[in-house]
Image (cartoon, rainbow, N blue to C red):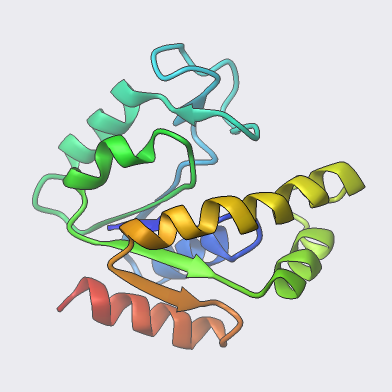
Length: 159
């Protein structure tokens, strides 16, 4: 299953909750899954805004999980190339004021803390989220408690 959504909607938090429950869950913002170009070796393990999935690494991740439940989190320009590889695509969303609050208050990732980054993130939400919504099999508002969000995601995944 692909878990997608713009910055600040809670993808990393949901992935951590899934891992805590024992599920295989990968946040592609970390671990060298993203790069400035789809075929360029990632220059560092942490993604930068505007980067794409390194397609060979994502392909390997998906192929190695054959038959095993795998949750993959990310929001990159080339993710649509892999939609056929996911049985479900879940869009996590939140109101702009929630996204703003989360970006300004988060501790594990500095993206969104400068005025320019915050403006870009909110612009991305307005422009990119409708495109993500069109390809999603389910949308979950993450302003709900984490336990409720995770339970709803799992019900959708395990149907």
